[in-house]
Length: 146
Image (cartoon, rainbow, N blue to C red; front, side, top):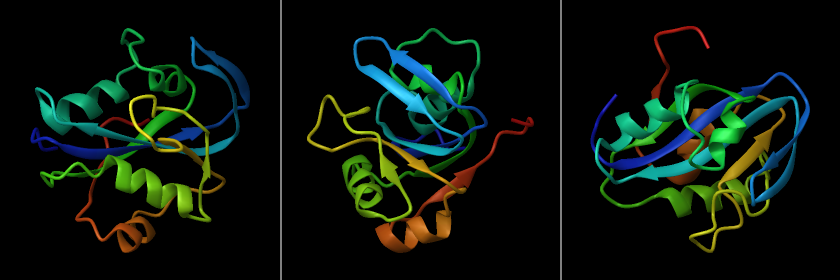
């Protein structure tokens, strides 16, 4: 995976239902199915550093998404190394898609997006996503079984 700056989506699978208190953010009712989280990585280490962190099990809980990845295991990452920040555009595309249900207010305390976390009953399609966004998106899967 590239260490350039860019935008990413973490594709996660939840095999269980759970009620989670996400620190000060609030409560989420985690469902069986698929979740995607839209983020950006324009700091040191770029996409590689940020996505690798999301996939680690032994990490300090820094962001709200860390509470989700403890139960909804990351399966793959979709990413773009375009220099333009695409995070908000991608979140808007997901919000407007029939494929996803937004988790209102999650991951977007620093922007005007409705959400950066979305639920899907079936595995999301990278092809459908790239068709809707027009972005050049690559996929990364870890070498280990997740």
